[in-house]
Image (cartoon, rainbow, N blue to C red; front, side, top):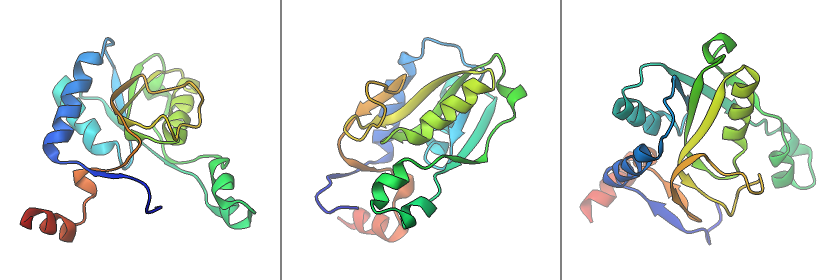
Length: 173
């Protein structure tokens, strides 16, 4: 990560406020949630608890780095790699269902867009939801999440990402 990128370290209380900001936005009754690993697991779990949704699914997506090693522009090549789904719900679990896709942040938008497209191809009606939307990194022009709690240009560090030794340092301050 570049040193000139602003970083923001969130507390659990701030995450709870973001969840509280999301909840009134939902004008759809969802049949299920797909939590996008790994970032979407905790906010998705918080949303399922608050919304009392029991049908919880997961999706894991990887963008292979092989193209990055062979390209003259490693960053650009990585952006054009096709997604590889490591885990995804079966089509019958999604067909004719309203599905909320949850991730922590929409940076480039590649991961959640790949999940959205695959969900739609399976016959589901996907809605995207993130805690943070970064319009400055978004690769999808005017496309944005259906639901998001905040807009940012910072690199967000969520409380579940903080290493234990960093956490101890923060507690001492």
